[in-house]
Image (cartoon, rainbow over all chains, first blue to last red; front, side, top):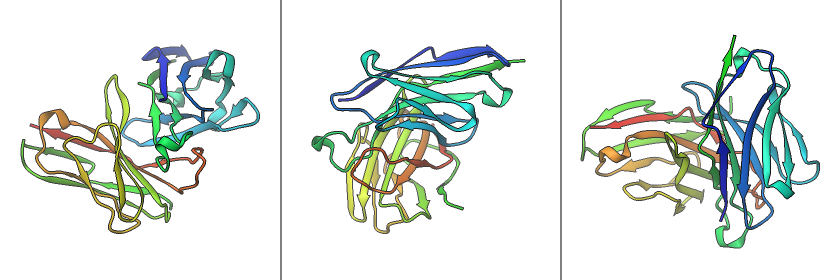
Length: 119
Length: 115
């Protein structure tokens, strides 16, 4: 079974400061990991994903995340926060890694982190 | 434009009054799924469908039904809604490839309140 833990349900950073959103996962098979962003009154959209290969993954809007197997982490970062980054961010792990769940593209989501940008 | 369309976006109803939330995608995706989002719980899967006439339960299926008669549509049915089904609902779809790495495209969400 897979699970995701996001540390900090609310994070506030100043405009121009580093953004760091934490995500730790648990998976019985090699994980596929995702970060989604949800802007107010909108659906979720993909920021980035890790499947295999390079452990540092770059996404849209200047975000990146690093897969660290030894730490079971997939933290999201952005060097300089912008006001438009204010949103809720979800880390997720794919559950299609084993035959017991064949055919289900289910994502197991964390509880989300609301990012506030201080002017 | 490639998208997943849900209707209604907002609905207030009363306990026991049957309702359907429609979901349609125009990307010819095989896989579709419903999630509910609740504060502090993130998103949890309700039902999913691998293709036409193939559906299965997710993590929280109680009180819901689905059908997949056409590839593009995947309605969510609440036969007898109860207040604990007050939530924000998302439909999502993806191309079905046996990899687990497929990206889900989400609808804009349907906010349901059951009084």
